[in-house]
View 1 (cartoon, each protein chain N blue to C red):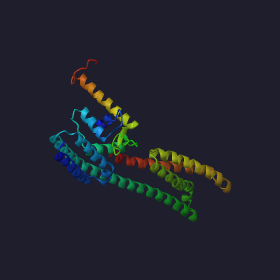
View 2 (cartoon, rainbow over the protein chains, first blue to last red):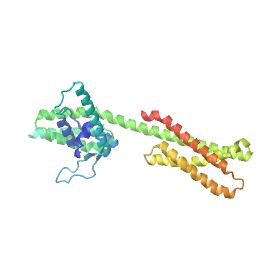
View 3 (cartoon, rainbow over the protein chains, first blue to last red):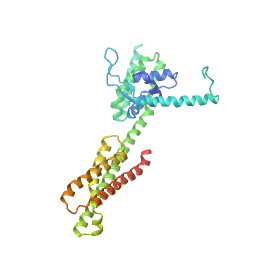
View 4 (spheres, chains in turn red, purple):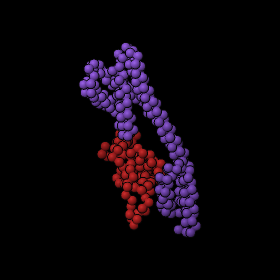
Length: 105
Length: 212
C-alpha cells in the first residue's frame, strides 16, 4: 500500500503507470499484478487515501478508458507519517551500525 | 512481432477476461476493464516470448491469489452490515420499550391514583417526551452524518431537554394552576441523565466489537 502511496506522491497516475513506477523503484522486486493493484486501489479509495480523478484523458492524448488516481490530503498525511516512521527506523539501524553511515550523517 | 505471437496475446487476453468472472461482481464491474487494459499495456511492453509467458504466469498467479481475498472482503462487509442492522434494531427496540413503559406507568398511576407512581410523574413525563424527540434526532444524525454518536447524544439530549423544559414552563405554567416548576426541572434533569447514561452504556457495550 505504501508503494502505491509513494507512486502517487508527486503526481496523478493511471494503473499501468503506478505498476511501472513501483517496479522501477524497487528494481523489479515488487511486481503488482492487476488483481493486487486494483484490490489495493479499491481499499485505498474506501479508506479515503486516494481518489479517482473525474476527468478522463483526451482521446488523442491517451486511452480515454484510463482512470487516473491521486492522493487525498489524508493519504498525503498517512504517506508522510509512514515515511517518517521508516526514516526513524533507518536512523536507529544506522546508530546500531546495521547500516553504513552516510557522509552527511 | 510475428503473427503467432500477436494471436497468442489476444487469446490470453480473452482467457483472462473470462477468468475475471471469478471476482465478485461489483469488483469486476468496477475494475475488470481496467485490469484488462493493464494487461494489454504489460503485453505491449514485453519484447520476447519468454517474457510474455512469464507475464501470463504472474498474472494468473495474481488472479488465483487475489480472488479469495476479494470474496472474503465481500462476505465480511455483508456480515458487518447485518450486524449493524441487528444492533440498530436492538437499540431502537430498547428505546421504544422504555418510552412505552414510562407512558403506561404514568397512565396507570394517573387513572388509579397510585401515589408512588405519581410521585415520579414529572420524571416519567420527561423521560417519555425527551426519549421520543431526542432518540429520533440522535438516530437520524448518527446515520446521516459521520458525527460521533456519544457526542451527538450529549448535545441532542441537552438541547431537547432545555427546549422541552422551556416549552413546558411557558405552556403548562400558564394553563395549569397546580404547575410545579421545580418538579418539572428536576424531571428533565433526571431524564437527561437517564437517556445520556443509556447512550453512554450502549457506547461502552459496542466498543470491543468496534475494535474487532
